[in-house]
Amino acid sequence: MLKKIAYKIVYILLVIWGVASLVFVLFSILPGDPSRMIMGQRENEEMRLAIQQKYGFDQPIHKQYLYYLNDLSPISLHSNNTNDFTNTNNHMYNIFASFSISKSILLFKAPYLRSSFVRKDISVASIISDTLPNTFILAFAAIFIALFFGLFLGVYSATQQHKFVDQLLSVISVLGMTLPSFFSAIIIAWLFGFLWEKHTGLSMTGSLFEVDDYGRGEYIVWKNLILPAITLGIRPLAVVIQLTRNSILDTLNEDFIRTAKAKGLSSFRILFIHALPNALNPVVTSASGWLASMLAGAVFIEFIFGWNGLGKEIVYALNYMDLPVVMGAVLTLSICFVAITILTDLIYYLLDPKLRV
Image (tube, rainbow, N blue to C red; front, side):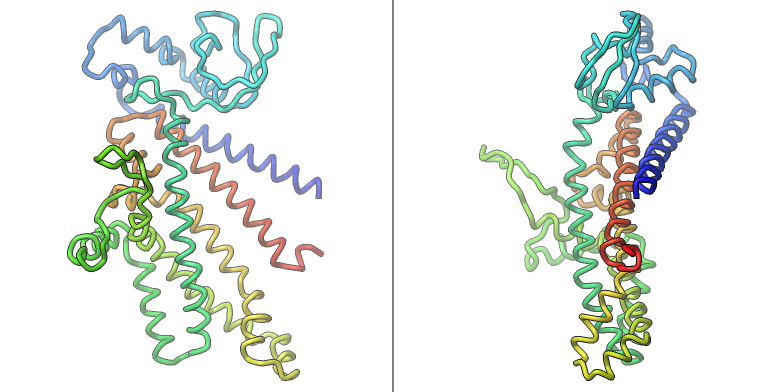
């Protein structure tokens, strides 16, 4: 057991290091001078050199890479040299503890994702912390819709095998899997948020939190979650329907199901007590994969519906070449993907008795 835990920890660290390295390389080869992006219209050579020194853009690429990893690492080593652009005197870090070692400082700190190029003096961590919860809420709402209706429709389709309802659900599932998310988002927003707005009471755009024009402050608008969650949940819903149907049909042909029928158990008990729990493994795999991909795939959905999540923030940052925000967002989503994968392994352990043995 300890060996398996150690393997998982090493796996997590290697994945995070690989993603961080890949992100750094990809954004380092982009054309353009980051210092000019930060200055905007202020063409000042002295200021440009100062910004390059502050952010380390004047350093060789391998040193920039080491500085980047040093910022991300919760345990980092820094020079006492005041010219070091990552010096703790800049108060950039959330430090838990520090120790002096010869001419260096060893820090235990929160990972530092640096600051936005566009929004001055605003850290990337604060931008992500403000937007990531909204993306999580949207993703969880979408996967809840997919699982709730997908399991029900999948079981019902299995009980109606080769009948009209089963064939109709199969056609709908294929359409749901092939329909591009950005196209379905535009259609759903136009139909339910504009054309039928008087009947649905829903808006084409809107986020979870809105500010009242009459001074009552910020308040939650849950109805704005409906359309983006349904749109984001269409494709996983189609997958869950087909997976549940096929898995149920395979499980119903197992020997233990025939034994249960021979004992005279009711069809309801056989289906929901014996067959369904044993058919959930592929559904759990699919749900975990879709939940992880939704965090990244919600970019178009959030942008079209005006949902203030991390996906919309990535689009904004790409438009203005705000590289630290994009790099921090991609790294954060990757860590979420790894965490969800590990959580899936734990769910497997709880659902499958053979793994516990």
